[in-house]
Amino acid sequence: MPILENIGDLSLRVSHLAQIIWKECYADILSEGQIDYMLDHGQSKEAISKQIADNGYEYRIITDNERDIGYYAFFIDGDSLFLSKIYVLHEARGKGFGTLALKDACTYAENHGLKTVSLRVNKKNTNAIKTYKANHFTICCEDKSDIGRGFFMDDYLMKKDIGQTW
Image (cartoon, rainbow, N blue to C red; front, side, top):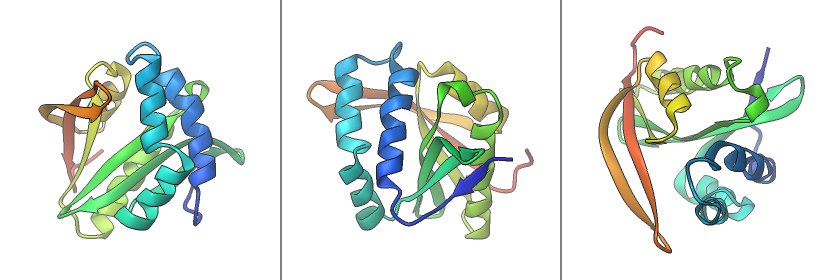
């Protein structure tokens, strides 16, 4: 059974995972330049540490047999939990680890009296969208955001009401 860890400063472990997973996950969706830019600005050890210290992010590492295989992060935004990141190594995808992380985030939200869990997902990330829909997330709207240096995030915003069955 996988373990969902929450140990103090995970920024180095998460940053290492991000370098691997993002290049696996986004190679067919984003340019190498945009992947590197997003890793530097949002998934570096320094950026992760700042998100935790300044913005209330909670990071959790997904492990299997004591090996780091993924991570996810969230923060509370009003009466919603915003699931900011959820990533699993290619070799571990399709084995229920992402769903386990989704359930953990929803349980956290429910335990903290929040009404919804929301997230952003790249419109071309069809496997992730299928997973979210299978776990009762619905597409609310589309959002295209300028993230700098001529790069854009072209996403769906999705949400799930807390208390829905799995």
